Amino acid sequence: MGRLKLFLPLGLFIVLAGFLLRGLQLDPQAMPSALIDKPLPEFELTVLGGNGQRVTRQQVIGEVALFNVWATWCVSCRVEHPYLTQLAAEGVPIYGINYKDEDGAALQWLRELGDPYRLNIVDTEGSLGLDLGVFGAPETYIVDALGVIRYRHVGVVDARVWLEVLEPIVQQLRQEEES
Amino acid sequence: MNRTALCARTAVGLLLLLFLQPALAVIETYEFEQESLRERYGVLTAELRCPKCQNQNIADSNAPIAQDLRKQLYEQLHAGSSDEEIVEYMVSRYGEFVMYRPRLNQVTLVLWLAPVILLALALWVLLSSLRRRTGVDTPVSLTAAEQAKLDAIVADSGASNVATDDAATNSTATNNSGSNNATLKGTSND
Image (cartoon, rainbow over all chains, first blue to last red; front, side, top):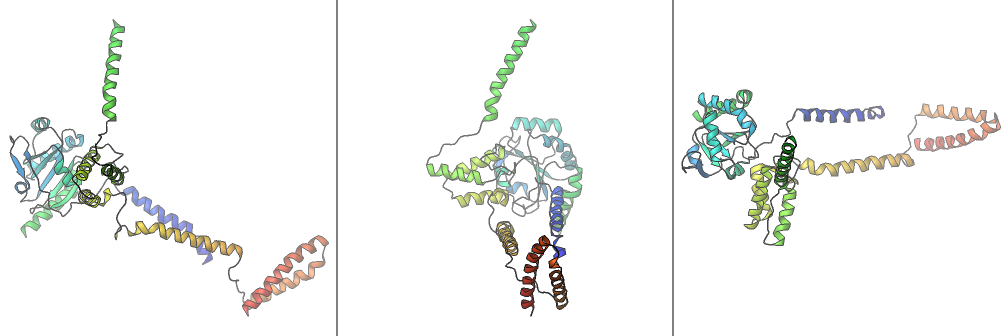
């Protein structure tokens, strides 16, 4: 017993090293959204390029869709834009939330780079963003047919993220919807 | 000609600096109707954590999201919300993460109790090592065979006591304490 005690520091070291090793593989920026499994917040905002047309929550729910928070000041948004355009061409419904942006700049962006969005909700004040718990762009939410937020992805959506993370969730939600 | 161009360029550069400086340093100021509101604003901005820049509170951070949260906080304070309501508002959007002082619940129980447990553990180790050093610890009992061996050693060193003067005094001292111990242990053993 007395001799076993000598191994105590080694044991402690191994436990500590184990924690540190695990820490290396964790993303410190990754945070679970507080709104998972909560309904998409209520809002009434204007549609980008819609001449003052209003849009509410009821008009954008009804099927499994992506909600993409973007802005022209956001560099990573430019990176993910081509992939979103490709997804939209494949028939994935994507709604845009134009977060704290200027309408003119946003419209020009869509003219130049293509428009993957069903429609864009203008969130100049960031009020919808605040209700969603957005802390930066880009962020992408998966909302189910009942308007419940099921997943949040912080950062760029690319082929890897879509195929490995988002698409399986979207497929599963569609199956749930059918059954 | 070259010189004027250089001068002009420097002037433009300095002008640019002049314009940039306040833009970088700006942090919004709020006017409070009551002193108590200002104090609560101070406490809450210190305790709410910026979701984007994870190791700063919203008072320290100038990230856009921290500005938004400060604005929210200011508006809600003036709308008459209680501290609990405001914290609840933030937590419902950004999760438990936004609190620098996490609530006591199942997940954070270990976090809250760990210091107490570690302190108790440290005290226990300290006390037990102190007790061992002062020798109050219960004596280790010898088996009959060990006791016989010890007696033999004691008797043996007793016999060689008369060697030289120096060695004699030395070994008597050890001898005495040794035999004392032996008797002590002998009695406790019986």
